Length: 464
Image (tube, rainbow, N blue to C red; front, side, top):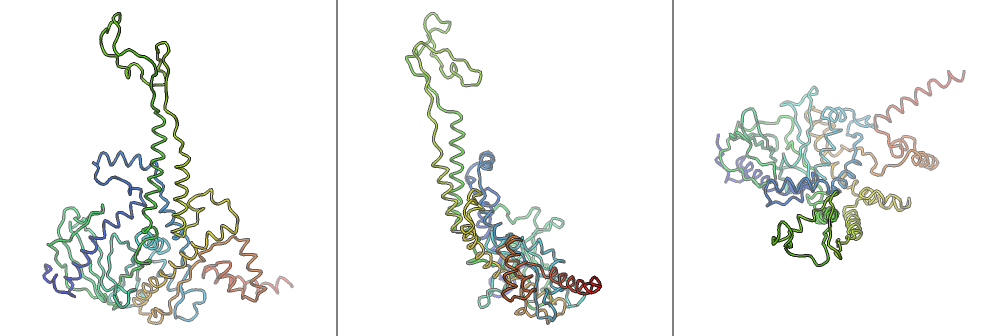
C-alpha cells in the first residue's frame, strides 16, 4: 500500500516522511562528529579520491584523537551495578531487573549507549516483548545509535518519544526498510533497492517516493507507550561538539609540526661562488648549458667536485619548540572546556600534587554524575516497559525504579580501608560502608551477608 497521506498531519504516512526527512538532514552532522573519532575529520572534502587516500595516510601518522579520550574518560566511569524497584526485598538490587539486563547483554550494550550519547548527543534503546504480557516472556532492551534511529520527543514530556524511526536494509529481499514506532504500535514501510539508497558516508538524504507499507499497524501488546527511549545530553550535543574548533586547531598544529620536520630532512642547499653558465671549449659538451641540478645530485654516496673558491650553503633548522608549546596550550584549553583532567590528555601532567589531581578530577566527576542522572531516567523507562512485558505492574512503576551506579570518583583499596574505619567510628552501618565506601555490587553485598552468617554459625564450633 503506497503512502498517500504524507501531507495530512498526524497520519502514519506524515510521521514516517517527517522522521525520514529529519534523519536524512542529520547525516552530515553525524559524519562530521564521527570524523573526530575515526580520524577523517581533516580530509579535504573537494579533493580527488587518490589525493584523499594519499592525504589520509599522511594524516593518520600525525593525528591525535583526544576527542575519543574525553569520551572514554566519561563512559569508563558510567557503570550501573544494579536496580531497585517497588518490589519488596530488593535491598541488594532487583534480581528480575538484572536478569533482563544480562539477557539483553547490557553490560556491554550500555557502554555503546553511553558512548553514542557522548559522541552524538543522543543514544537510543528499543524494547521488544510479546503480544500478551506473560511472566514467561523474554523481553529485551536493545541499544541503538543515531545512525539507525531518529525520534521526535513529546513536547510536554520530552523524556517520552512521540514518534521514532529505525532505518535499515534487507539484503536478502533487496529493500530499504523504514520502521515507524508510535505509542502502542509499530509499522514498516519498504522500497525496492539493489543497493541501499540510504547513505552511510555523511551525505544528506531525502526519502523520495516509492515507499509502501508492508502491513497495517502492528499492536505492541505489552505496552501502550513508544518502545523507543532516547538518552539525550544537554541541548542534544555531544561532549566535544561545541569544541570541534579546538580539535581542528590541535590536529592542524600537529600536522604542521610534522610537515616542518619532514621538510627539514631535505633542507635547501646551494653553491656559492662564480660558476660558469656553459661548458668550456675544451669540454666534450662545449657550449651546452650546464645542468647543475644533475651535476650536484643529493644522496648518501654522492661526491661533488667544486670549483676553487666555491662554498656549499645549507638552509638552517627551524625551531619547532614554539609549535610544541602551542599544542600543549591548546590541549590544556580543550581539557578545561570539556571538564577532562589534563593528565588523561597529557600523561606528563600526572606529576602534580595529590591535591591538584583531586581538584582536576572534580570537573570530570560532576560531568559523569550529570550523565548518570540523564541516563537514569532513560534506563528506568526502558526497564519499566520490560516489566510490563512480564505483566509485573508492581516493578513497572517507573517512579520507583532507581539505578545503582558505581561511584564516579574511584579510589584505591588503601583509601577505602582508611575511610571505612573512620565511617565506622562515625556510626555508619556496615552495609552502608560496603555499598558506598567499598563499592560492592548488590550481588557482592548479598554474598557478604551470607558469608557473615556462615562465620557466625561456625564461630561457636571453632571456639569449642
